[in-house]
Length: 317
Image 1 (cartoon, rainbow, N blue to C red):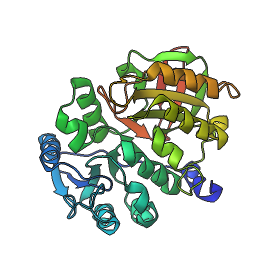
Image 2 (image 1 turned 120 degrees about the horizontal axis):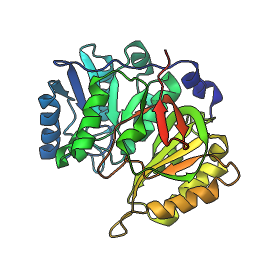
Image 3 (image 1 turned 30 degrees about the vertical axis):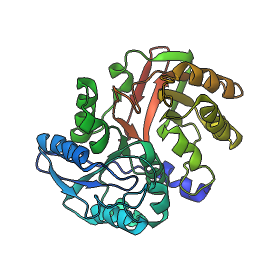
């Protein structure tokens, strides 16, 4: 882990302002290709919220399992980051590919004009990278050509719109997730980071990996069998990350094919692998690749307290 780069996220945060009616929201596809009809449905949702939508020039490009060549995907993202009228950027979908362009993202543009960035899944790699290198707070939540197009439930829709349109204020994320289950009690205070487990593990040993000291690690994933989840969590342990974190929050873990919810299996693995660092661990938080999916600020300080069953985000003053 590059400690010099990782420390940037600790020195100060870049917290973008909320979107207002009439603001321009950019749409880019830095990972996998999006279905055009689904993407249009996601764009219509954003327009109904009162935003003007600007699609990237290459948003419909195709290059196998990627949404265009690396240069095309990176150009679209950097163009949105550099364009002053664009106040937010929504990522069309996940898939794979954003890791290929991390080294080419215009970090100076991010620092000069922090904007709301919304995405999850493969976008986890971008969120961790921008937090590590610029201290940018982003949002992990439904994406236009994914869950938004498929149809959000009322809880997920309200959470998403609130994240986009209201300032980040002290609030308890567990209030909207009543089924949270305590696996190991305790309290922790630290930066809320993480996302899709496979991407969290993939960034270990790179300059895009954050310093996990005292962090509250939020994890979720989809289409990964239990043994692969075990392997990735073990990788986090062997890399020293699980010895550093202050707490763990587990979201949805949806297995491949007909395996369904792997939550109970993941709970067991998480407890086993944190025995040497008996941090508070909670599970069944409504976030991830199935609905309801709460939109969560990524990179913000938070307090986890299992005595009152709360996860309170507390942006610095």
